[in-house]
Image 1 (tube, one colour):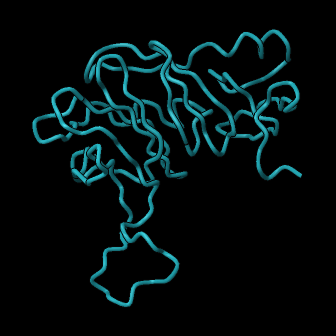
Image 2: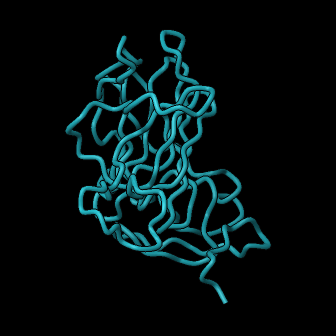
Length: 201
């Protein structure tokens, strides 16, 4: 972000632009549409505008991460259309062009469902998903629109210590077996490293 004065990027996970949603607005002119974009804020917290180009198929944006080449990865987290999209370095107006729509989708990765947060370790992208309750890993290769992603190898601890199956690329398994995409993964107890779900008794 060296070519801009922006310091913080924020997503709103589909919340409306009306801060207090406790009651519907009496004034019909008040905007209560979801904020389906990434907002840029100055160091003082001032809204500097949208980061993503207008008109994209954005829905319930959540986590994001920047790779070593300055590309921005954003979780498009709507349950019925989960994907990880990739955007290029910011232009003079601060907006990042779309490079790859649907770099990772539910079709290409059964582990991805309602993605929540992203993080990089070198060229490996880690994604936590709310509805499969796992952290999955993806190897990112290429530049610009040639960018591609493939599930990384399942964590060696899971492969060596448990029988499986697991979603391809699972790095942290769920403590509850959540079937998705034709796969019913093995549940790993929380005491052995499985992620505990908040709905567990």
